[in-house]
Length: 239
Image 1 (cartoon, rainbow, N blue to C red):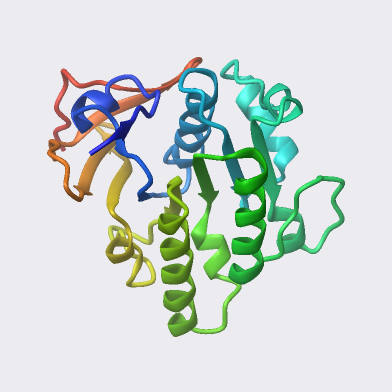
Image 2 (cartoon, rainbow, N blue to C red; image 1 turned 45 degrees about the vertical axis):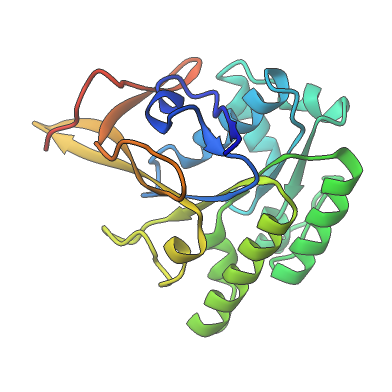
């Protein structure tokens, strides 16, 4: 199986080399758990180190806020956009019902999103896609049946396009699959956690599944530094 490096120090080691190329991976965790930073780092590394163009779909934040936050890590997304190496699709403004000057926008609708993704992937040859988040996308739907159907459709289409895709999802409590389908439809699941140990907040990560790929399942602590996420592979997380 061909693997793609995530660009997250420590993570590729416990994955056995990286994520399976062309598969859909669910990245689940609580609010503030580091999911967006993970997605930004995955895309940025893919572009600057692996030569793989990317797409970031933002339903949770305005694209300008995304660009500003990434500058804190030294990741100049605007520069990559100007070189047609990265496209940021604004799903936040249509969801919030406000106007936007962003070149790429999508309504909160799975069919429209899929059409936009297919067009953009074809235009720039994108090989990495991050959709942040499917929770925001799902909450606009009328029923859980519709949510499950649309999430499955999105996952199936992304897998058929041979893109390595990360779908972020906000966990409700300890349940990875908030809508009962996310874990099932993904070829891999990575769970981020944020817990308090002796009043100290600690972030941790574990690989819940990665089909067809040997990996460890131990929970490992990680930190968010000025250069991004680092997974501490020599430390086990106890709680």
